[in-house]
Length: 166
View 1: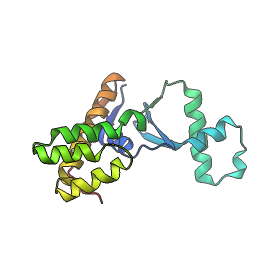
View 2: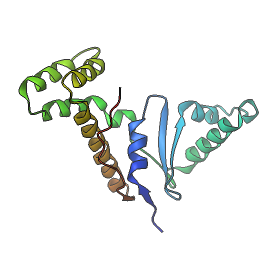
View 3: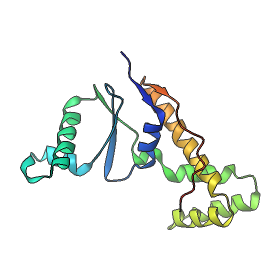
């Protein structure tokens, strides 16, 4: 029997990816599991579970299951580097119809501090909702591509998101 995952679970995991964590899809339960690199290090270092709180033990035991699985039941989701937030920002800049705003956004994402300057600009030009909708759609497309590439059936339950973040 083939698993069917809610697309929103994949999108949510992609949305919160960072340098310290990795996410996996359990192909049997369709659960998305996020674990820290410390959880995997504890397994690899053979550390005693007695030194950890119960919730940490559960994470470390899950990390061990994933490490021993060889991608049979647990598939790694795209990492933060696969998501490539900067590229999504760049594509958004070029999608803006107003040439002056487009140029200002493109300049804002060059060099150090690009993310902060970009965020300042989208609020100054009152296009933050457009950005968050664009970003959400980009993550959704990435999730669909990942599911298709891994022969994972999915249910599209992602709402049209124009969420506002500060």
